[in-house]
Length: 161
Image (cartoon, rainbow, N blue to C red; front, side, top):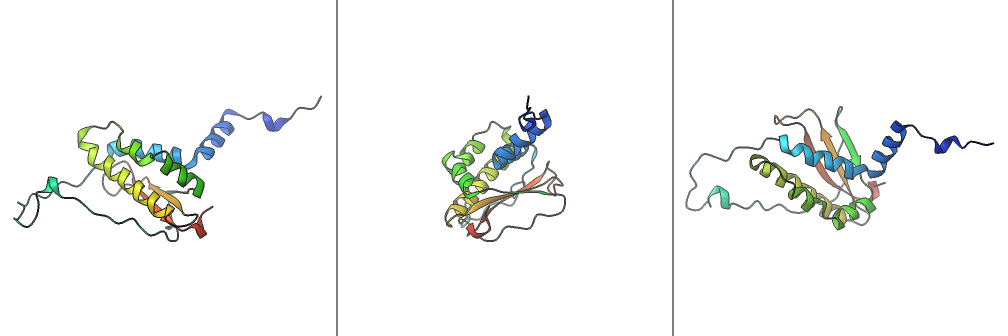
């Protein structure tokens, strides 16, 4: 009798394979969940001038980033470079919209919306480049007082797996 040991995996091996298979989606879920403990900058206490709209009506216009080389991953941080197919899948699944729709306490809503907007811009920038992809970097040593810092970057197709 021949036993195929490759089919017999430990629970840890199965979990590791599952996490690796889901890659960026698992990392994005962690990033989205952590948004609830991220802090946001307080609005300016200065009174708006007539030429300046009130703070709650200001719109931050940000251009879609141009895809380029991947960002260096700092020591102690976690980095993931999605494939082009996974990046297309994130766009088709409307991952950024799903993150924006997560129920979070009102005081964390701006941080959650910023995370969704940053992801959306990175995906759009990556898909504007043939074979482009998204890079995710999570730094557990937050400099802003939150749980962690994160970044989403548009990467040119020549650097994507």
